Amino acid sequence: KDAEVTFGNLSDIKYNDVVFCKRSYINTNDYPLQSFIFGPSFDDMVMPSNKFLQNISNFNRANSLFIFNCEWQKKAWININHLINMQVFHFPLEVQKYKAIQNIKDKDRIFIYHRNRDKQELLYLFRFLARRNYKHIYIDYEKDVKGKEDFDALSIFQSSRYGIVLSEHSNDQFLTQALSCNVPLFVWDVEYANRHETNKNLKVHASSVPHWDNRCGKKVYNNENFQKDFNNFIMDLTQFKPREYIMENFTNIKCSEKFKKLIMTMEENMMDMISNV
Image 1: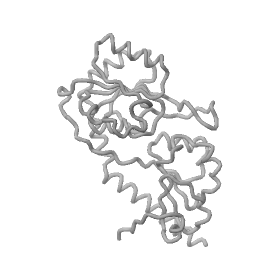
Image 2: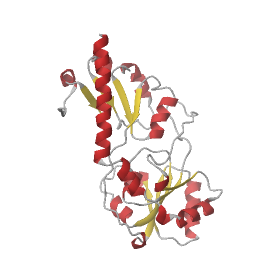
Image 3: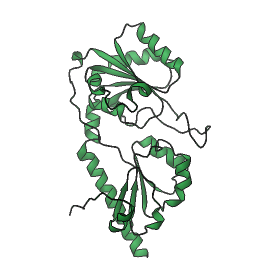
Image 4: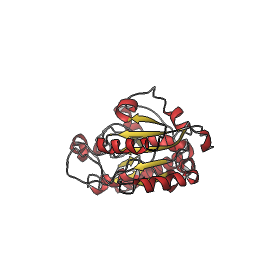
């Protein structure tokens, strides 16, 4: 039987079995007979903030479950012990299935996506492309994407042969939408998150792209063999199938199936709680 879905506030919690809190903090100790799913859209979900850590005692492991948009982020939260005793799952968001121009020869440009990386790295990339006279469009996350609902990323993706990524650690969906348009990515990736509010020296393994496998393109972590790695990427360009990867993992149906499994997990946990009361 399909579950009934309602939208409400704190006063409605007691009338529901499972509560989905996409952006809110709730003291789950006050609701021992309800189950809660938190995430994946907290503003501080990339890494835990001081605000979250101050509220962590409000989460009861028995009835609280946390979901994260990407695998590296889930592992990071567990490894730094903030959720070591909590139920934590990787639950990706649905990706819009934009129309993809399949014939790569019909695409006439490339794009560069830059987000909070060292200026010297960006300068190296610009010089590298200038020597090859590549036509490209430059996308700066802070200036062009952040908070800009009218930014037309779709037209850029659909007309791009491939994208070059120079980004800090990220769990956003921007680059995943490019993969949905069947655009391979050459990623100058990071190995660690470059900042952490509660411990500036903490090394947390991370990535510039939230979702990835070998069909999506190529990753590098420095510029030591940049030209060779880039040439290999170009040689294999027609072999990459990023849209195939997206369709296998992030469609509405795939994400719905995963969410149902989460609900079932919470229902099983709730039955265990009731039997132990």
